[in-house]
Amino acid sequence: MNAEERFFEVYKRYPEGESFCPYRICPIGAHSDHQYGKITGLALDKGIRIVYSIKKNGVIEMNSLQFDKRAQFHVRSVPEEKCEDWADYLRGATIALGRKYDLDYGICGVIEGSLPIGGLSSSASVVIAFLQALCAVNRIHLTAQELIQFSLLAENEYVGVQCGKLDQSCEIYAKKDHLLYLDTLDDSYELIPTAPNMKPYEILVFFSGIERTLAGSKFNMRVDECRAAAYALSAYGGLQYGKFKEAYMRAVPRELFETYRYRLPDNWRKRAQHWFEEYERVEMGVAAWRRGDMDVFGKLSFESGNSSIVNWETGSDELKTLYMLLSQTDGVYGGRFSGAGFKGCCMALVDPAFEEKIVEKVTAGYLAQFPDLKDKYSVHICHSADGVKV
Image (cartoon, rainbow, N blue to C red; front, side, top):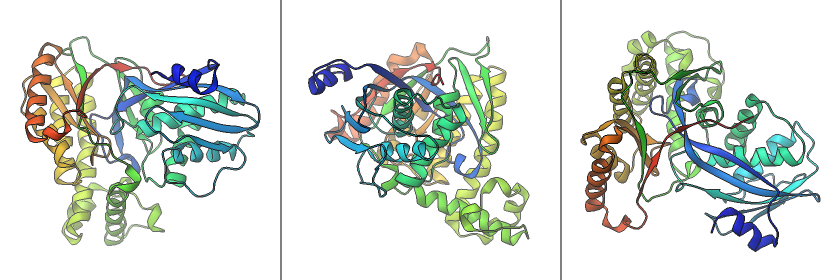
């Protein structure tokens, strides 16, 4: 059953509108946007669709093909505290939008995702697609920056995930056959076209079969550990610092880290080391992409994945297995965990000529270790795509 069929089943009529937001991958630049790092990104040709109609009584009533529980609330009386379900993202987005714009109308709709949940920023995709629909019925026209801001506020303030703006920026700024190069400190970005001499590539997404929830994982702890390292290094180096929540790694010179790194607790040092090395990997990766060197770009993506395991210390056994299989398979330029890295999926940039052999080898190796996930594990072929039209 697709979204339109479910809508007709529930409301006995067809929807009046549709919104869409693509998923995204970040080949290099993971775990750095919350500390104002630089990132690379590609939007995918798969994502979240919402079909909807206006509700003039101001009620929001959303159904999901992925979840059983229906969400229902009024645009002017959203629960102040999260309800600990999938619709918290929608509630947070409504509150963020309503702070600046008058909301008179609600929507009834159905949400449909084209890939399994976990690792491709599906939460950000849902929020952006939902905001597009809610803005359409209320005749609100947001800028790209506002759409990113409201989406981020929903996750940070209402849901409680300390993520940065990587997901939203990729899903909005991206362009087909271009690499997004974004500096999250000042939001400056560049869309770098695929060089004519670059080897052919496509994107494979290997879903582990295990979903994850950022707010319930160790994601926020990792962010706090990285921020704690920045706070301590600022104090050691005699830099000005204020509140803990205002500390971030981008304000700390690399030389200061090298001087005082062993004064830090091991966990803080590892988080800081990942951040600085990832910053450098992004710049090297962008240079490789400009000259059309997919081999070097892919190698850096593998290194990013290894640092996520060793220094950021994320990765379930399932994702570590997928990563190792990809790193040992011919035809894979590079790859890493996609998303927070606790569950979810791995992405890989691959040579299309090796696609079938890659899928066969990785699938066989993975299911040999996790046979119970046979019915939930899946592989998806994706390509780069344009971001949201704002």
